[in-house]
Length: 154
Ligand SMILES: [Zn+2]
Image (tube, rainbow, N blue to C red):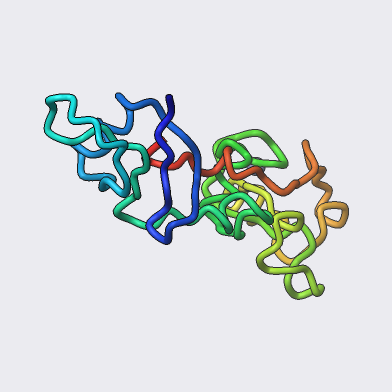
């Protein structure tokens, strides 16, 4: 029989095994919300429903795309330059901001090598890839939540 896990705001999230629920209680991740009345000789009565101590934001995590970040772009592209495949530490705007490219769009940003005059980001500067004689090795895309984060409690 499963134990229902409620978010700190009381929304039901999922069910876990009794053993898992007890571990959450022991780790102070959750508190007992409802028991089934059976005292089975442990520290806690047998839980039927537990509630997370800290609020887990599920709504933004699983509906809608992740919010843009530089770090996210580098993670999505595996820290590889979208133009040459070398190690990337900078983020390039495919359509430059000076040309009306979007600053915080997953689809207009790629990981790019930078830092030296010969790096792709420096060579490209305020030009489009075609103008700079560079081509994208892959098309930028919106990453999944899973690529960027895994919830710490899972
Ligand atoms: Zn490069």
